[in-house]
Length: 348
Ligand code: HPA
Ligand code: ZN
Image (cartoon, rainbow, N blue to C red; front, side, top):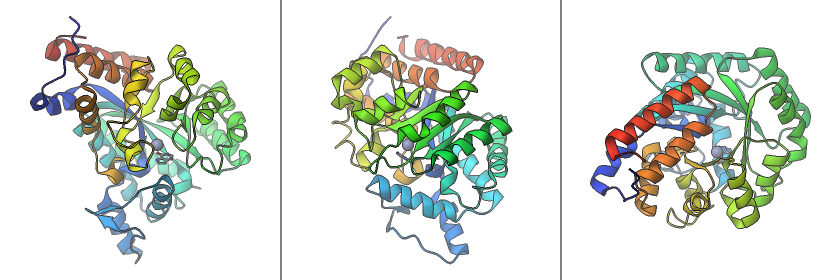
C-alpha cells in the first residue's frame, strides 16, 4: 500500500538510520577525522590556518574548503593514517546505515601520495577491506581530477587508471572550484577515453557553476551522475532534460547551506527538483568538516519537506541505483531496501 504520510518525529531518527541506502557523493578528504590531521599538524609543528569551532575548521566558502583540504591533506605522510582515514570513512557509512559508497579522492590534495598513487590506493583499500570483512559498507573509489589540472595531466590520470585497473577504482570524477571557469572542453577527451574503457563517470557541476556547467558535464564529459547539480533549478529546460534522461543528482543539502549555495534546508531546491521528477539522492560531501551524518541529512529533509515512506524510499532507491556498485551488489541492496520498507512502513 502506498503511503506518504509524514513519519512522527519520535520515530524518524531511528528509521532514517536503518533505511538501506548508498552514499554517492562523499570526498575522502572530507572524511579525515580532526584528531588525525591535528596530530599530523603537531608532528609537523604547524597549526591550522583557520579558526577552530568545536574542533573543526570554520569554513564558509568552497574556496576556503578546498584550501583547507590542500593544507590538511599535505600533512598526511604516513600509510597508517591513510588506513585510519579509510576506517573512519567506513564508520561514517555504518553509523548511518549506508550499505555502499562511491568515495571520491583527489590526489592533487595529497602531495605525499600524488606520485605514489598505487601505494595510496593500496593503503586505502587495506583499510576498506578490513571494514568490509567486519560487515561494513562496500566501498568503491572514484579518482577525481581538479579543474585546474591540464589536459595532459587529465590524460595521464586516465593512462594510470587503464594501466593499473585497480579493483576498487571504478570511476573518474572531477571537482574543485568552477568560479574561475569550468574548463570542460579541456577534460572531454579524458572522460571519453574513460568511458570507452568502461570506467564510470561523475562530475561536480551546478554548485560553483550554474546551469551551463551542468549541461557541459552531461554533454562534454558524459557524466552519468552530477555531484550537486542543484543550480539546474535556474533553468527549467535543463530540469526537464535531467528528468527525461533520468540523470541522478548527488545532492548535499547541508554542504550547500554552509557554502552559500542554498540559504537554508527549507529553501533548498532538492524538494522542487524531486517534485519535478529529477532523480535525487541525499549525501554529506565532507561530513567531518561540517560535523554531520548521512542519516541526519535524510532526517533534516524528511522533517522539512514532510517526506513520508514513499519519498524516503524513493531517495534511498535512487542512491542505490545511481551508485557504481556492481549489478549484483545493487540488486542485493535494493532487495534489502524493499524488505525494509515493506516490514517497517508498509511498502511504498
Ligand atoms: N565541490 C567541489 N569540490 C569539492 C567539494 C565540493 O563540494 N568538496 C570537496 N571538493
Ligand atoms: Zn563534492
